[in-house]
Length: 262
Image 1 (tube, rainbow, N blue to C red):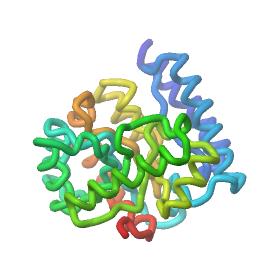
Image 2: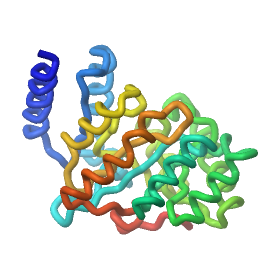
Image 3: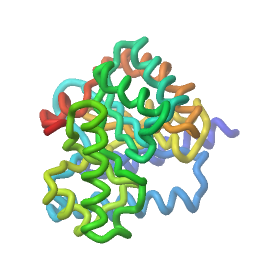
């Protein structure tokens, strides 16, 4: 009965997915998510993607080209963490996959400095995910600028590269945030497929979610912070199964044909 319910849930979600414009949607769902959380997530997705579709939010990427080869980008938020980030890096190295890491600058201290440097040295992108991980919609323009620039300056100090790609914590944006980020010369990167690893610590559920909704051009949201053990457990199988379907992994700058660094 449980398998039947999951199958019906997936069918229903795919029916909804087919009715939407894939250029302006964020996918990913699971029956393991709390109903209230699912409702909140759906509302946030609609409120975030509608202004992009309408042209009010500019210089924002949800996905790559959906009409060409089966290219996808793995992105990891909330690093560096000397435990799980290292494990993610080990898996990516084993499979020869390059990814993009949005890092929190306040975490770049002590052992995490080594992790941040390792990420860059192994050919992954080290990008801006703010200094303290606040909701940017609750900040003033001056505070947003401070969060952005102090983060990029710290990354530059560690890697020699000043990142121009930014992902807002929690995906929290509004017109003031978008305009301020753009004025500082950054490009905002969101995602088209949410692994939901932040909301459920279940390896099989994460794998099922990604394999159900993945499509060419996807920017896949994952996390490599210390609380995301299921991400580490699921990552190798996700890479293997996506490759079996012909998907090719790229860094964001490669897939989107944009500059990652100043």
